[in-house]
Image (cartoon, rainbow over all chains, first blue to last red; front, side, top):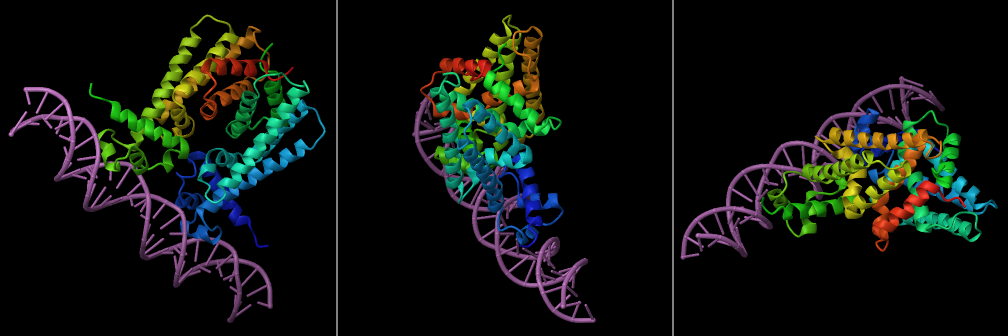
Length: 189
Length: 189
DNA sequence: ATCCCAAACTAACAGTTGTTAGTTTGTAGT
DNA sequence: ACTACAAACTAACAACTGTTAGTTTGGGAT
């Protein structure tokens, strides 16, 4: 294959801008200027603005789905599975905080792949739910409102892309451990 | 005063569209069409697209700031203060899920008032932090990582605008109680 | 030296954007 | 019947949008 480097640079630059202003507010001229070239030159490497968004979002969504499959099929306790999900989010997000902004905020601007993205997302949430469900059945975790538990944990994990860049001194491992502690045990004495 | 009704209708309609696609992707023609009129007619009631965004965001940000002042000055335990903050978010969000989307996702598109918004937001976060700090000093809550605790709770509360519309059968009181339980005690057995 | 080709460029397009100016409409109060 | 006015309209604008076509550039392999 040829050098994909330039295309990856464009996607990386675009992701950075998408995080700051959102997909719709970023123009091809914005992306080009940030790279020190003209907008038309971008089309030597990518086919459309839409393709940039697709590349950012779908690769991340698939990474989450793969990670979840791994966790689902492993024979560990519910608490350990929840910890693994937390670590999955921390690790993926730490590697690509810019892209995670698009995944969270710009997926609705996907054209051809919106359905595919939503299928991945729904599958992921269903898998996470079945982990929590099973934990309650086996009496491994408290018997609270499943929907609210899932919402609470996933909300925190989905916001990591905003928090991690502000605290670069915290290692992923340390962050995962701290998060697990708070999400699992709360802030009670 | 004259009938502000029409202006409020525009803002409400706009907020709904802003939630679906974001401020930048919504055009004045989109808003007008949703109201069954032409784009130019909107300007009989509002002065600019920017003013719509400002009206949505600033009123909400000020409501949060006022609520926090109330909580700060009340003489209750740390746990009760955290519960009050949770209730504040649930109540404001339940009344205006559309506007909360703009508050969370479109504040960076504020022009003149971005600084004012950020000041309100930073003040709010500082106040919440001082509640948690004091709770730890007084040994009312666990001695974990303050930053991560704040991040975790606020992430969940800021995502409420996505969750509440999907579960309209849950009353604000019930939601507040359930959330308090999970955020304070975790999911442990 | 010549060729090749990735990667930049200029120029232009058709459509969309927020917004303004000026005009018409319908209704409520006199 | 007349007036006043809120609130809609049509028409147009200048700027900006994503994208295409065709051209130039400069360095590596032959």
